[in-house]
Length: 288
Length: 261
Image (cartoon, rainbow over all chains, first blue to last red):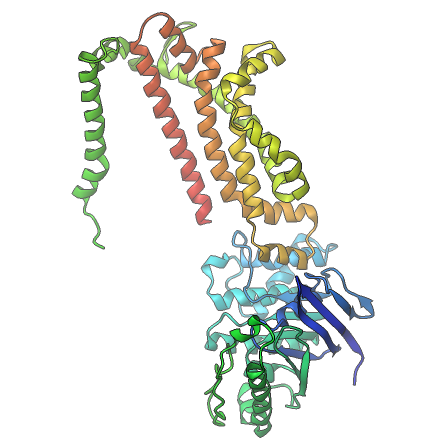
């Protein structure tokens, strides 16, 4: 096993009187893709936000490359659930903004070149000068991906990056993400509530218990060979075993007696139909 | 919904407003002929004002000039006071929007100064500057800056947390955050403030010129009142109203452009 790059140890986050996350432990190795899955409102995003440095943890430590994290930094690229582009800037300018900050020594032209390069990688080479309003939701999130990758961070943090997209666009962007990630060999920590997305992308799937006091419930190692192609992944018999296991865990969390009102907001009966080996039926089942 | 044809639109946008104006003029004529004999009627007003309207840029004497010439003097004065208001008001609003401590310290004083009438500021300006011209500009600035201050602050406070998170994640420097994020995000609000400020600046001009006797629409109005030429009061009122309306339209054109962008 390679060296631990990101260490999250015994991290808690308290809002008011409620401990949303308590005793969260997770290590991410260099080059590893880890997905955190759990029900809505369980505190997944809070964990990510703490790793990003946007929120401080109430207890515990987050260590990245040997140093404790308190603030956001250039070593982490964040892709938010909404693309959060600045509407008064073109796609290129949006990406360039981060590049300028990450590589202050380069000239303006080089910044633009780097930004354009990453926009081409995400398939937006023709839309460099379009404003976000002129782009579709999927295209905007591509810009969001380009903006994060263009910083050339060692760790990518993705907070349900495709949660707001329709399933076709989502699959397209998952492929774009696989492509980008495998070229750059970065560590990645992604939050999702989509079981299939988690299995397709990650080396390990971390299942979180429902909040409050959410922590790591189970960890599943995804042994599917890389590079992964969606079709091959879906035809692998072990895929459905793993899928069952994750859904089983999430179901048990949904039926767990809720310690607080917040945890009840989860849909009570996610029907678990063993997905047929062909096609993508059931893609949306667990997406809450 | 069905698209209105040309005739209907012409009726809505031209005929109806003209009908309204016509009715007010008729009412004015009736009132001046019956209830208020001191009020000059429409026809008499036109007769007496004709010279000022038809050769609007003439200068026959210091206080006897075409109406647009007077308007121009007033506009220049307003432009000076208004620019001053924006120069002070915008940074003040940005500070208020960005700093809680600043808001807590200065918001009360702003709320106290805001409702003070131009008639109260002007004497203070005269004391401070010893001359009517800068006193008038000072008054215009003091009265018109508040909407700019408050709307700019509101604009800065209304910047979505998402934008702020992106700025933090990208580690933007303070100056870059201000120029690239805060200002553009707050700009639509700021422009609403600018528009309201301009309205007030124009409102204040009359008071400023009346008390200082400076040549301009307001000065002319006060002088004609003292000379008992009451028809010109109505001419001045109409001019002030029309100019104010045009200024507001122009500003809202710019404002709408910003909202689309």
